[in-house]
Image (tube, rainbow, N blue to C red; front, top):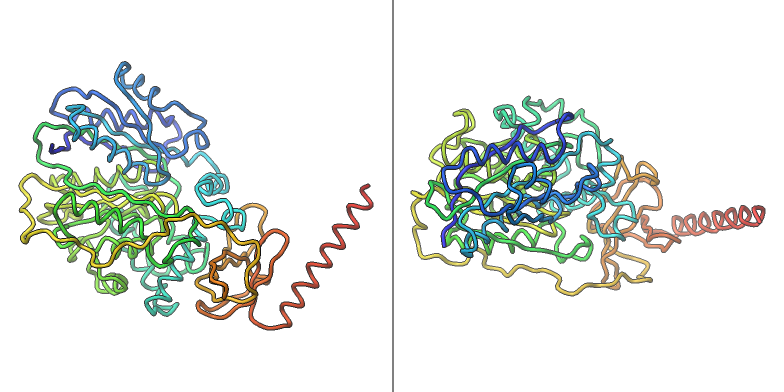
Length: 503
């Protein structure tokens, strides 16, 4: 059964100090309901990532139904971390496609800007696997290590990597400047980018999506409209980044894309524009490769050549993306869908309108790429796939299926798969904090802290020592090992003396 998009609505992203989360979501929902031409909705699907922590609000599904004057209708809340908005769309899609409902309302939102940056960082870190979080990893630190692994895999020098990331940031801010719904509506310069604060090497401030308030809504229906959803894909991966087979790409994204393309009977070449989850600039490149929109290992070249610009071969994030439109974590996936609907209907300003757009794709990442969705939307008059449909990816998606407990002991040596210098670490950790993903000679991959705050080279051989609270790594050599062991013993003696005199 085909599922069509009726009305859509969105509030401008940014700061909304006067509105509660429910009020924010209701405003977007009313916009979608007022724009709808079909029958009244029969159910509500509501999404927010963590309103209990961000705003102290719970039972959102009932609260929103009441606020909209729809009490009595079925209403449920959905959550998949930062891909929640796309998951709400998925649930609403299947509710209509199954025949259970003729018309439903999907709404997603998040309110974050009233909280301090450290508190928001802590709330977002709750989705990180406990061991990695306790080792000092934050979302940006894990993203930085993925970025380093990508650069090492495909041979990018650090200088070239930084310039490519800068190009992504400049493009998305340029697009956001044209979007009246974007949080940042001003272009940035190369000097501004390179002079911005380093957060977690190689990611600067302008590589990271901002803290945002926002909400978006769509009405889905069985009644024929000009835009329909033809493909939905959903994939997961291990919660722990260190347990994944590959660090340089996201298997859950590939799995979701494979399923979405198969359902839609389309391929990457059919896509006219894409909204790709760019919570961090490198994720746009990795995501585009995982979707098959750009050639694997060469997505960064496409950025250099301008192929992802609005008037390029494959426009990516004409809205400004999460980077410039803003990233209210629970709402971003649904906001991507609203942007694509507007693009397919030709309802955006001509300066950012993708000419002749007939097929659009949204890509949404949950957590650190462990709960991801891909949705394909197209105009009713879009031409069919030119050739008989065939699977898009020739290689099977590689995902570790079995949960692996962490080793208590590992070999004393390993290879540094990736690392980052985290300049804004979680509370209680020193700055700078150097974290590394290491494959030990005994075959396990671990997340470890550097014994001393220094720079390393991805792929180099390192020594590993077990501390009281974590694994530590250092440059290979007996001197550093002895220094580390002596330091540990001295700390142990001091702690013992303190306890003795307290007693």
